[in-house]
Image (tube, rainbow, N blue to C red):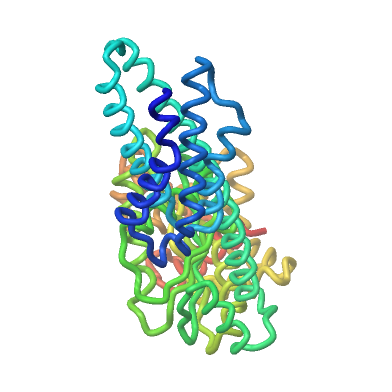
Length: 400
């Protein structure tokens, strides 16, 4: 200890020179500290070692703060903490080499004493590194939170049309390193597991998105824990390809007892960035109509659900339409019949055989029920126009 204390000033300069020589600083780590500041940190490190080793105690918080101060300062403004921690290791390596030299010059020093000395050196180094790393992680978390809040404000402005001009929005995008397309179609996505929406659906879909390759300038945003919003650039491939890829990827990652199913609502394209909010509203409407029509999931374009939106705006007219086409079946089923499930299965599957399989019935039973349907309704179900009207009535009944 006496030998090291006598060489303290020169050893600190030697440690500082090693740091300056061996550590590379670049744009990713911020501005390098001055040589004088590095030397002061090295002196503080030696003082910490000497005090704790002589007195056989742990370092105080103030002693650690003096040694870690330079690294903490760098960590608060750096994008990478790697060179900062490397600098402490380089300085400790030089100091340890000097300690070994002093030990060899001290005949009465035994190996056990050397082990105790090494423990003080590396314990102090670990504590300093932990202090610097803790500061760096806290700084990065604050930076990410600021970035997340900024992206959230930007995305909300885009989908709610609350920005002043496209130029102003383009400037925000540039500050966030986001490249915008000239226009987008909105896609609202949720993940179904069993009969309910997955609680972590948005996170799972976002993870699946990382495995697919959407076109350039695609934007994705977690709107809430269950909903992922994707803005699909106009002119790219059909957006349903993304939905198919996400379906395959979610099955690959989370297939188990409850198979995941992607539910999607797709808005139409409207020119310009001001058109994004309209597309987003349409995607939400398509999602909601699709959820009520097909609870099991699937993709629904806004154009496909427009007739339902128009009809349900006047519930009285929609109810008249349903009663006109399904009234006799509803009355018959209220007395214990099974006509509506049979009609739904037949229209959905398109054949007696497939309808029988879906209903878990013998095909002759389904044929008998269909004959009864024709008698009750007075319609020919082989007529495509009749089948279309029946399907519309069944769907409207779910929406009322």
